[in-house]
Length: 132
Image (cartoon, rainbow, N blue to C red; front, side, top):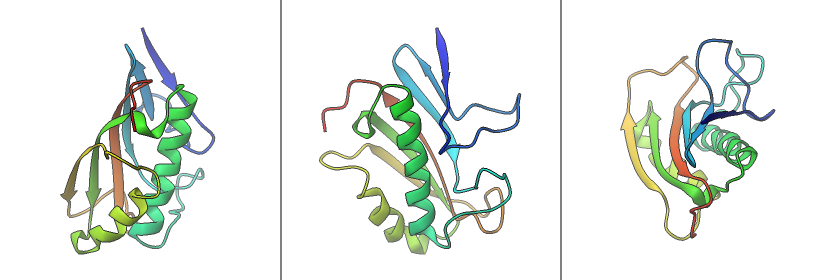
């Protein structure tokens, strides 16, 4: 069975586009989330650090809605438009994870969904399996 999870902190996309969080057989799949506000236009966070914190708040709200916790994340893929600011991403990430961090890929891209979006993060979690 596949279950879709939502949270007021992670605005839902328009119908028939994608789901922010889908859980199947205890594995949660998170679409690439950005710091786009609920209005669908405004970007919250002026830099990589602020945007990453906002995105992880969304991930946290979604995983908790699915019955999990941040330590259940096993894989993250982080897309950035300015790789030279990657330490800001790591700084924010350290505020949400401790112990053994999830496996992670950091990918620099030329553009995301708007010129003021510097970070997008997708992930996979195994609900209830976190040991950190």
